[in-house]
Length: 188
Image (tube, rainbow, N blue to C red; front, side):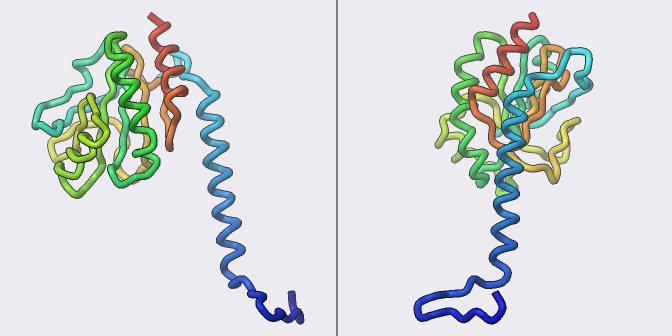
């Protein structure tokens, strides 16, 4: 306050620090509320789902992944980067989901948005023992998913007809993914 003096050993906060802290707290609260809403919303009703999803990209081994080859299955498309802490935090849940649900007709696929090249991504795949395909966008990629200038991680859950049933922004717990995947599998 104006006219107050600081005593010995007391420090004044820099003028910019309080507004910066308020903004940081606001971002954390906004993210937490967003995750709570995301977790409670469930998947979109079948009649309101958007279709015409395309995803054709090379995987780390040079093979071609075409989303249309997986019609009839529930597909989870995770957009991530190896340097992203929330991406790293949710990867073990995605690995477990891929292993536990593969026999039920669920496909998990990752799309790396790393720009440092495939070797960085290969190390990440080895570190987390990722069993699902990891794709990297290139000039001949085809996708209807927004992959440029998006927050990461962003994950899309597709129903058996390839329609987007849910979009997640930010780190999502494995229990939310499993609940939503189970809902789509129950649709038959």
